[in-house]
Length: 75
Image 1 (tube, rainbow, N blue to C red):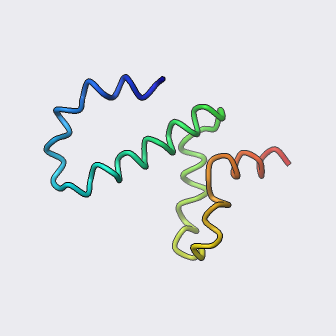
Image 2: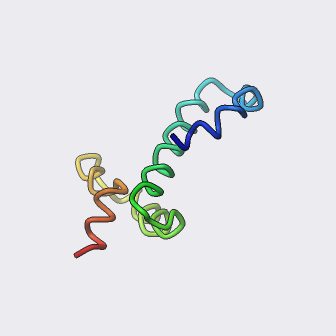
């Protein structure tokens, strides 16, 4: 698994600033790894998804996953 390359840095990340930072970083890594597995350019995905994120309702967030983005690009 590719995330294993990040685990050796765990001790460095103890000082992220707060306990809430850990789950946020885990979510970011999850998105990055999903993009890599799907062969998506990470910057392109983030550039397409992040600007409209504030205008989406929570019920439509499933349309913003890397898999949904890849499916929409394949059409």
